[in-house]
Amino acid sequence: MKTSDVIIAGGGVIGLMTGWTLARAGVSVTVIDAGGPAATDAAAGMLSPSFEQALHGGGGALSALSEESLRRWREIAPMLSEASGVDLDFDTGGILAVAFDDFEAAAFGADAKGGEPLDRAQVLEVEPSLSSCVRGGWFAKNDGQIDPRRVRAALARTLVNEGGALIRGKRVASVQSENGKVTGVVLGNGERHTARHVVIATGARVDGVADLPEGAVFPVKGEALAIERISGSPKRVIRTSKAYLCPKADGRIVIGATEVPDDWSLNTDERRVGNLRAGAMAVIPALEDAPEISRWAGLRPATCDGAPIIGPAPEGPDGLHYALGHYRNGVLLAPATADALAASIQKGRLSPTITAFSAARFTRLGVS
Ligand code: GLY
Image (cartoon, rainbow, N blue to C red; front, top):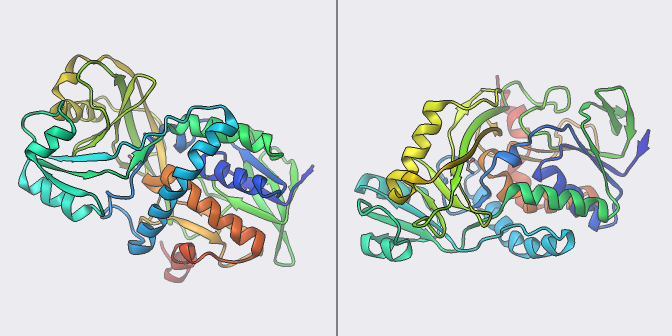
């Protein structure tokens, strides 16, 4: 049996970032990672508060959290890279959304927050490798990207360097409490670990550990592929209505991603992945000959209103906290989520940035 102040169930970017944040503040913390692929490993790593307003719930509160988190990434990325010795491929070159007709341009305009509209000549100036069929675009020059797998490796290393513990390959089966207060967790193999606080950051799998109505959190599978970054490749992240392309420093272009709700499998579908690739080639024709390197799938943890669940469990017990349902933006939202949870755990103070994300909105509504 191990004793910590805080146990975090989940070793993806949200769990590890929260663990590292607490460990840096001198809190004794254990992160329990069930093993296997986390949603983080499947993510492309866009840090993009400027797009996808329509896909997410949370309205202005989620926009504010996203912007705050991007601001924190700019501080954290160099610090995490230095502390871990891992190059995070943090790229602040902006994100360019590209439209092929007026309808798409209007849709991007309506869905974008910040950034500036560009006409055809301007968009080709920003990214000369684009298809000549583009009609215009939207450039969010403050958005960026990072490599999520490197982030996860860096966080695992720095968590341990700061005195935190990382248990791999074991699943938290249940949260234990006495007299309305958390006392610890029991793992799938029966091991018990004690703590005054438990954070549930288990992605789409919340059975047995989160007291949420059925259907509040569910998986939205995303399939993606990586191709070689050949001559004529884009210099920065490009988004279209069919695909996004994230050029990485390691010589890959990650192309994503499909949306398949309620599919727990991690297989990839030939037709859906083919459509992503076709979407990428339509915007950067030079990629036609780029060899494919790999393809994969991951499970985005979605919620039924599209906004995350962050903060104390509304029905108790005291000391139980949720960090769930970050859907398409777990990597972006990790720093702000970790900061808010750390403040809540250490000072018992709920940051105003997360009050809109309480699970109470589901328990009150009685989601079914
Ligand atoms: N963040 C993009 C995606 O989830 O596909």
